[in-house]
Length: 526
Image (tube, rainbow, N blue to C red; front, top):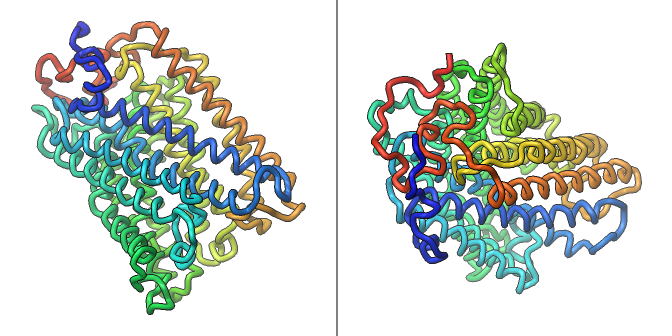
């Protein structure tokens, strides 16, 4: 298809046209810039934490500043990077193109969701003026009620950012149901759409619980109501129930769209129809459904009954079933495929390796006897990062490189992109695999100091963190170099089959010059 002279990049020019745009593609690009900026800030805090932990004793700052850096690293990465990263950024850009729509169902709500993220982040950073926050990103009571710092601002900022997530979810569900093009049945949708649709359900149903919880916490701090304060008849453990009822589904808000990206990458770079399409699609819905019933595995040591512990343990293990269905179907797709090892595919394979380790260790932590031993140790830190960083961020990087030609109409330096992957992948394992060992040895998390016996593995972990940081700097160079000097991309440089590759690169303002009609599945390679 000939490239349109009226694509979304040059349709209107000037900053104001971007800040007031209703085009889902431009809003997706604004989310991309925002998320990458927040990722740089959150990553800087991570580097400071690892630098402090390179040796016992005080290295670059004391316990108080360490706790504040840890809180901001966690809050930024969870609420500003990983949760909005794929749905709001990649999903905003790709979802309408995937189903042959001109835009999302509610373009003004779409723009409002971006402003909610910006305003919520600004409120969060106001807390720095009031001595930051040192509660950790989970804001556990009763300490988060009593501490005299800027915790209220962080909590209110996260509350506002929750509206961004809810509005995005409402938009995506409506778009999928109402704006599919002619012939686009549910079982002709790309698996990325299934992942975003499942995620949107979680965003709509789970996020309000977090919003109410954070609002109650703010009211507790400002007005002195006694919801969580035991001195006033409240229950601090109730906060954990409310928080994790949202925050465990939030893990799948982060990972389900990542799994959607992996499905797209594996089938595109295997040149093969994906194995078990319906099983992968239904497993997304299954993961979303089960995720609402597993929050109690975060609370095995919080005093809940033995019966509740056993039930939550079994339900948590049940999540492994639909997850394994996806993994085995991805491997079956790779089998005898014409696999091409471009950088997006490298990130997909890296995802398979790292997320499998995260998943297996998750089953270990679902076992009550093991969780009691590993609870609040570095084993949990390693598990969480193998799932979140090894899963979601690997998928984000793979998705950026995969859809970069479609977004900007340019190609990037493939060799530099592969080099970036190598540093990130190797550095990640050097950073976090030793933390499994540290956790098994008993090193507690959230501490700014540790016993000398843990020093060798902490040095290795910190060295790996520097490798990750260097790898992401190379990745940033790849993106900027591609934008400035990248050669012009063809409409379909990967030879993929889904709808977005059947229009111009970058797409015209209205996405398609003629309304598409779908007559077959999304992955008809052979």
